[in-house]
Image 1 (tube, one colour):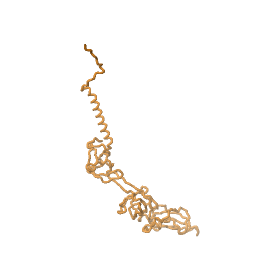
Image 2 (cartoon, one colour; image 1 turned 90 degrees about the horizontal axis):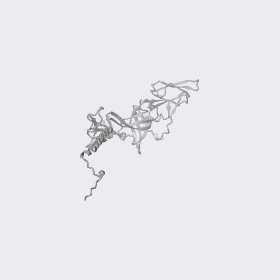
Image 3 (cartoon, helix red, strand yellow; image 1 turned 45 degrees about the vertical axis):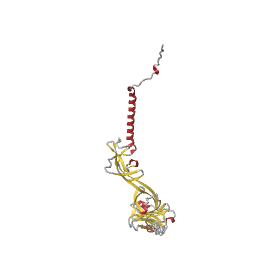
Image 4 (tube, one colour; image 1 turned 135 degrees about the horizontal axis):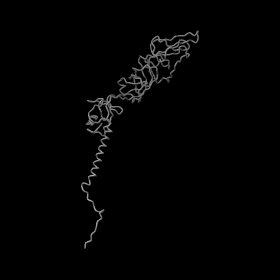
Amino acid sequence: MKKETTVPISRRRKRRTPDSWLPYLALAALLICVALMAWGRLVVYLSGVQFLTQQEISRTVLLEGIIIKEEMVIRSPVTGKVHFKAVDGNRLEMGAPAAEVVAVDGGGASYRLTTPSAGMFCTHMDGLENVLAPANLDVLDFSSLDRISPKQVLEGERVEKGQPVFKLIDNLSATYLYTEASQTELPAELKEKPHWLKATWNDLPLMLKTYSLVEKGDRWEGLLQLSGFPDELVHNRQVSLKIITNRLAGFLVPHHAVVYRDETPGIYLAVKKRAQWVPVQVEGELQGKVAISGKGLGEDTRYVSNPVLIREGSLVE
């Protein structure tokens, strides 16, 4: 007689029907769709679509130097007290009253000092007016100069006979800057092919170019000629100029925005919310920016500034 055994229901192997997989397939499909949507939004977010704009960037260096200019020193004819008739830094015409010296003896006679030529009126003297002159450029030895000590004659101050009272600066004549600079600070071609560079002094514009430069080890030493400088500049002896050594202008984009295809540079444009690669010409590069040009590029053109995840036809906004 056979003995029947009963297998518990919990231990029976359940057979899965095709319909039982549907929830898992639906969930997987949903997760894939969500992932694709999230990836698409991430690509759009990181693409950084911007408008092309005309920009300008520059690299500058700071040069300190000594101004060499045409200066005429006017001395006191007698010992006495000075009374100025002009304002320090103003430009005077020839024959203009500049100062008056009242003698300390001789009954208080006064002596009027007028300008022998036109120029900028200046009461700051340093004793180098007749030394640091353009006429002496070929014989100047800057290494032998003592430390420059400016001195100013004050209103009512006693001056001795023959003592400098003021000077006239010819701000319309050739003016130079003596400076020393590292060879890496100035463009190498400046010595071989002198050309005008833009510069600023106290945020005021001027131009300069090489007059004479000599190499001394890893440094350059010499003279730069100034042009278009503000009148106030020549009122100083020692100045600091900010020189623009490199300049880049045009449609500027980040260096990584340029994508090469078969060694041809190009950028992705945003056309109807889709990425479209177009070739461009690279005109220059400076400080991580690239100047580009090409057919159809304008200030109404939208481009992808960060194409790391972009492919042709990618969704962009």
